[in-house]
Length: 96
Image (cartoon, rainbow, N blue to C red):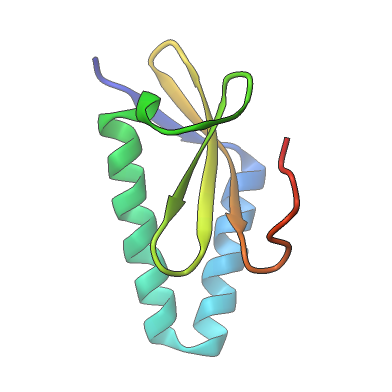
């Protein structure tokens, strides 16, 4: 089955904020973040049901060594990315 990936506006803004933050620290970190994000998106495209639930129909996938994660839900053949979170800022925070 082929899945379509969609991002909410909030997820797009969170992604841009993190990318800019890494870019302000070091452009190489921004490139690493972008690479890890792309790899994670490919993983979700190929097998979105593989990753763990954090709430009913809400899943998460951590990505890379930069301690970030994507939070998403699946509706038929659409995977909707609802958040891109940096886990270092508040590691104990619940997202749902």
